[in-house]
Length: 197
Image (cartoon, rainbow, N blue to C red):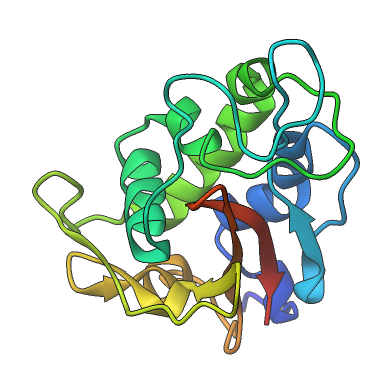
C-alpha cells in the first residue's frame, strides 16, 4: 500500500503559481522584493525615462496606462493571456527613486517568466482565451488615486481568475492575488501585486 504525505496548502498550489510566487515576481521588479507569501506586497516592475531618471509612468509607446481601473486590468489580463508580455509589463507604475530602464526590465527573461507563470495559472483546458474568451472586471471604486482589484473580481470566459488559479490545487482556500493600482497623470497603472490570502 502506498503512503502519501499531505503538504500544507502553500506547497500544494499549482506549479505555475509557485514559480510566480517564489521566483518570477521578484525578478520582474528588477530589484529585490518580498516573496509575496502571506500577502506581503510585491512591487510592480519599475519605470524610468530614457535618460534614466524616474518618471511617474512607464515610458515607451506601449506604456500609456488606462483611463479606468477596469480598463487597465482588462488590458493587463488580456495581454498576459495573449502572450503580449512586454505590453503587460509596461502597464506598471514606477516605484519612487528608480533608475531602471522599463524597456530592459520588461524585455528580460525574468519578466517573461513571471508573466508566463501567471498565464499558466489562468489558461486552463476548456477555457476560451481572448479574443474568443472575454475578460471582464467588476466595478472598481477608487479611493483618491489608488484602487484595489482582487482576482475574484476579474473573470475569463465566465470564471474568476482566482477559481482558475486554484484548479488542481489542494487545501488552498483563502489564497488570492490583489493588485493595487495607482493613478498618475490621469492614467491608471499597476502599483503592486499582493500574493497570499
